Structure formats: structure tokens, C-alpha cells
Amino acid sequence: MKNVRPATFLDLQAITDIYNQAILNTTATFDTEIKSLEDRETWFTNRDENFPILVIEFNNSIVGYAALNKWSERKAYDITAEISIYISEGFRGQGLGKILLNTITLAARNSKLNSLLARITEGNEQSIYMHQNVGFITVGVMKKVGEKFGRKLDVTMMQLMLK
Image 1 (cartoon, rainbow, N blue to C red):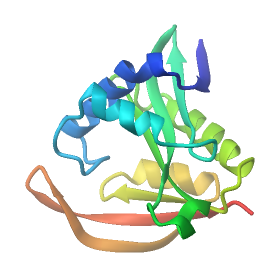
Image 2: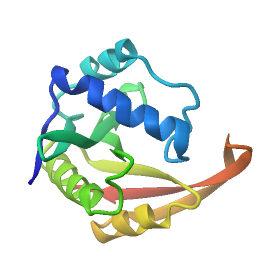
Image 3: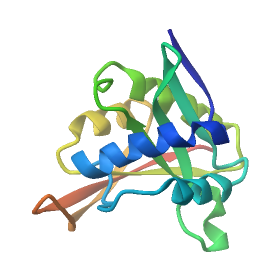
């Protein structure tokens, strides 16, 4: 059974493990060094109601999460969030990301946010397609802006207007 709910402090170890899998094995993030539990605690506590974190459980285990993160620390950008979705290895390709995307997009629509942004790394066409299906549009492609696993990679910028 699948269940999406707001993340709690007790979920941080699972969230940290999922994110570290992505750091070590994917280009879904341009982070290259694993994150400590303490780092994720800071990330978790430095947000408000406009920037939630959701987890998805499958058979009572957390197998993914979605977060709305501040686009910038500059105050004028407080109406914009960047979306992040990560699914645990072994659970990808089962529609869990789509469930999280739909749920967190609905939360964004019910917030004070005006716009959602997504940065999607070259080679992740499935993520681009998934975002297009909820209304994101491509606003540009940044060429060779990141390097991971010895490759210089493009990033597609997508945006969803909420209001």
C-alpha cells in the first residue's frame, strides 16, 4: 500500500539515505558529496508552510520524498519554489514519483507560492515528461552547466505558474 504524508523529523534518516543514493549513483542532483544527518536536519528545519517535505511509504517503508525548496535566499523570491523528487533505488519506474509530484504540486497550489521551478539534468527525459503532464513548461536549457561522472551536462529549466 502507498501512502503520501508530510515528513517528520523521524523520517530524516530515510530521506538522507535516499538522497545520498542519488548523489552517489545519479545525475538527478549535482551534489557530489554525501550529506550527513546533521546537514539534513538543518535543511528540514529551515523552511515554512510554503516549503513542505512529503514522503511516500510503500509497505510501511519510506521509499521516496518530494520537497519544495527556496529558489533563492533573496526575499523577493519567496513566492517561488524549486521542486525536488527522489525515489529510492529499486522503487523507480513504479509511478511513485508521479504520485509525489501530483501531491506536492497540489500543496503548492494551496500555498502562497506563485511559481514552481524544476531543474532537470540531461538524460532524464522521463522526469521532463512527468513534469509536462502536470503543466510545467520548458523555459530554457542551460548548456553544460554541471559536471558529474566525468560528463558535462545540460539542465532543462521548467516552470509551472500556480496562480
